[in-house]
Image (tube, rainbow, N blue to C red; front, side):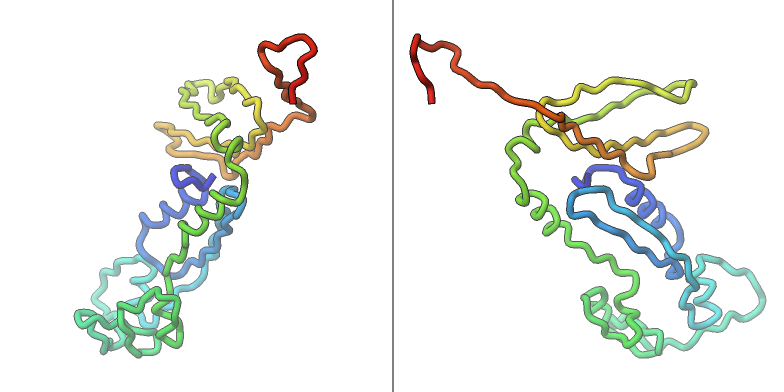
Length: 211
């Protein structure tokens, strides 16, 4: 998993969150595995940090139609000049947003940032083990089937002779139920309890000893 082209439950939920209005009342925590297992994701709902009535509705993704005045705290930070507003009223330069350093005392400039170094993680997985057998002599499992009205489908997959470690995931598309997938991938280890590879020359002379 985590090859960049897989579908996992965490990736789908994260992408679906981008379809909604940008709100800051949901805290997200995800776990990334060094062994290449699928990411685990959990959300913690919380109250937004709207500092006035106007931004409270804005952060909740609501559009209000009312003849009542929705007050908004005066903002003295001009965005056209490259300045953003901290929650305490101070300004910071937008070029310093998400730079791993808090320019605002309350950390507004680092809120909602996505920090991930995929390059270092890919290099770690690439060079941490012997790739001779595990990457080049394996079998890629991919099945595209039409389940039909029965709701199930059984098929067979040949297990490679070499020891294989598979993370089996599945997703489906239904005209009535929409998109669905496994919440957690199935871990399959195709290592036999005992196996041996025997090699010998195709032709040899009598009393010949090979080393």
